[in-house]
Structures are given as C-alpha cells and as structure tokens.
Image (cartoon, rainbow, N blue to C red; front, side):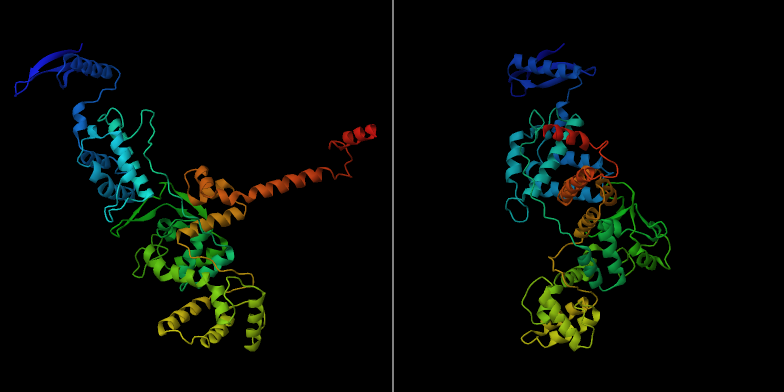
Amino acid sequence: MAYTEQRTDSAGRTGYVGRYRVDGRLRSTRRFTVRREALAEARRQEEAGKHAEWVDPAAGRLTVAEWFATWQETRADRAARTLEAERERFRSLVAPAFGDRPLRQVTHEDVARWAATMTSPTTGATASAARRRDATRLLVALLDAAVDARRLRTNPARTPSGKVPALPRAPKTKPHRYLSHEQLRRVADATASPQARTLVLLTALTGLRWGEVSALTVADVDPLRRRVRVTKAYTRLDDGTLLLGDTKTHARREVPLPATLVGAVTDRAAGRAPADLLFTGARGGPLRRESFDRSAFRPAVTAAGTAVGTLRQALGLLPSPLFDDGVTAAVRRLQADGGLEPTGVVDPATWALVAEADRTRRDGLTRGEKASRTRLLTALSRTTLAPGAEDFDTLTLHDLRHTAASLAISGGATVKAVQRMLGHESPVLTLSTYAGLFEDDLDQLGDAMSAAFQASAVAPDRGDEGTGIAPVRALRSRAG
C-alpha cells in the first residue's frame, strides 16, 4: 500500500516522497512539498503497476539523441539506405531541437511548434514541407518506440486520441511521365551502345527499378521461359558506396521477358558466367545510375524528345512539335531530290540528307553549337521518324518504370498483373499510384455492357423465348 515519508534536503527544507511497490520492489516518487500530492502520485504509480502500465521515471531521463542511437541498433535489419536517411534527418532537423532533451521533457506543444517552423541547416530558411513531414514522422516513430520500451507512458507527439496534428501537409507529387511505344523505341534507338539500348527497353517493358535492373546477373535471365528473376538490388549510399541486398519490398518475383528482347539479352549473356552482371560499368563493375544517366540516357532522351523540332529546323519549317502533313511533304521532296524513295518516313538514310540540309542553315552558330548540333543529328540518325510523331518533354530513368505500367495497362493488363510486375506490396498501392490510367476502363466497360444489351435484342434464329422480348411485345399488343 502506498504511503509517504518526510525528507529533509541538504538545505534544511522539509518535503515528502511517496513510496509504493511495483514488481516486488519498493520505489520512491520525486520530492513534493505537500504530503497529499506525494501520496497521490505514489498511488497512481502503484495502480499503474497493477495494470502493467507502470513506467520507471528514471528511464525517461535518457536524452532523445541517446535513445535514437539505441533505437537504430534495433533496426539493423532495415535497408542501409533507410538507416542512412534516418541518421541524416535526425542529425540535421531533429537533434538541434530535441537531441539534448530528456525523453520525459518533450511536450506536445514543443513538437507542434517545431514541426511547423523547423529550418534547413544549410540555408536557415524554413525546411520544405516534405522534409518537415519526414522529420516529424521520424520523431513520432522514435517516441512511439520509447513508449513500447516503457521509457514513456505516452507519446508526447500524439494527442490523447493518437493523432499527430502537427504533421505537415503532404506535398503534391510530381506528375508521372509516360512514353508511347513509338517514343520508347525512339529513345532506345538514340542510345549509342547495344547495352544502353537493351537496358532502356528492358526497364521500360518490365518496370524494374534501377537498383534491380543494375543487379541482374546472367543467371537471373531465362530466355527459354522468357522470365527475369528479381532477387536483389543495389542501393547507393550518400557517400557513393553501392550495397547489394534485398529488393525494396524484401520480396522476390518474376517478370515476363518480352520476346522482342530475348535476342538482345542473349547477346548480353554470351560468354559470361552465371554470376556475372548483365549490365556493367566501363571497368566491369556495377553500372552506376548517375554515370548511365549522364553519358547514355539523358543524351538519348534529349535527341529523341526533340526529333521533330530538329527535323523541322533542318528543313527550314516553322517550329512545332508535330510531324504533320507539311513535314511529310518536305521530307518527300528531300528524298526525291536525294535519290531515295519518297516515303515521307525519316529513316537513317533520310537523316543523312537532313544533316546535309542542316549544314546550310548553321550561319551564326558558334563552334560549340555546331558540334552540339552534329552530335544531336548523329544520335537521330539511328532512329526512324514517321508522320504523326510528336516531341515530348524530358524524363528521368524512373519514368521508364511508369512507362512500363502505362503500356501494360493500355495493353489490357489487370491490376494484379501490374502489381506483380512492378513488385508493389499490394494492389492498393498500384491503384493509388496509377489510378488515372485505369479511367479508360470505364468507357470500355460501358461500351461492352451496351453492346451486350443490344445484342440480346437481336435473336431471330432463337425466337423470343428466354430473351424477355415476347412478354414485352404481348403487353404492347394488348395495350394497342
């Protein structure tokens, strides 16, 4: 049973501490000046112990920074990139406000104020909404773990109902970029090497993440079954280190290998051991994203995305992103004058004529601009441009994954099939990410329902039995 004891401190001041028993051990509250307050606190602590809700007050003396270090040690199974991001977020945003503060001294008001006003350590300005949201989530998770470890009775970052009102609004996500089949072929053809072309097509037709496609080995590809096994992925840390580990969702999966890529993938695997990487860097090691993006992907996207505009400029036509009838007529004249069949399609032989025509329109360009123009036309000489083609905005390597989802959905793939191909944890994530791509399904569903209903009324060979038409006609006859 709880009771109190009178205590006198070194300054001669008299006070009271509550005494209570939890887990068979006699414990003390902090010192109070009023006896009834000490007794009330002792009773609360004793009652909490009876309901397994007791928290040792001394456990909350650990600082937030000390608890973060302990908490991270228990998360060793998480991806190295995840732990690195948490450390950076804590060091730059959480620690300046709460690092030296004991856990039990963190208040809800402090968290709410900090979440709304936290500043960037580099600029001193208010951090972006995305950074504030991620940092707040980290602190909430850290304090939740302190509650689970019985260092805190409740999480001060949450309201009594469990909500986190200080969480900043989620920023609007960048709109996805999708390529059509023709635009994808244009990008792939504009690359300067067979490896780059195969990698671009494989990524855009299977939806593999960069870490997954760069970690593929010869053994992961089965041309006979036309399957690609995704079992691991590379993760790049901020210091440039590449770590080979599990995929993002820690799950293995198989994706279909398009028949059009079987030959190219087989050529990549020829003469290599099963454990060798399918795509490699210049020195035979893992292919790095930043290197591939700078030297292969970005130049190809720039050339392919401006192909129509480049063609129009070389032919002296008005600027436009469309390969219209005027461009077709000009291309046919150029082909006829150059001794080619006037098809209107700009193939590699026609691009050579376009390059010659472009040289006559380079007056006023600097030497660097002329060199850039030559590189652009050299890349385009590997492509084929047909009437109806259209230029497109620049895109990132990750947009190839979005392109794979778009092409699969437009080809009639189900949500479940797209989920399995992309390696999403659930169909809900697939739907929420690509909800806009499924809107056309409503039109198709409506057309199918309408067609089926209309077909039910046209059955002269079967008569009216079973269709519901005869009773309607009979009613009409009676009504007449």
